[in-house]
Length: 138
Image (cartoon, rainbow, N blue to C red):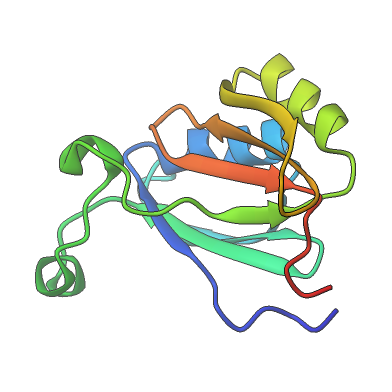
């Protein structure tokens, strides 16, 4: 599978905690984490990988980019506006791992009419994630 050329970018109020959670609960791996030299709780940029896929994230802070783009965290927006979907073969095992690590399971694993099995989870800052065995590329 080629590396993804669309990479979701997320903002978190507590980026270090989000990185720990995403790795522990969902199985992401740290590729790069750039913290502020004087304040390690401020993450300027992080890259987490899942197989050949990647997400990027940072601490939510005001900048020219966030003002121009209107970017908000889920808490600031009061709702989700996206939900990354990650292709994963062991949906039930992944769901159990996420639940054990504290993820809120918002949809239990279930077979889909279009094929595959999927479940949904919410991370501690409210972002919604879907994990499923349906591979739209197949």
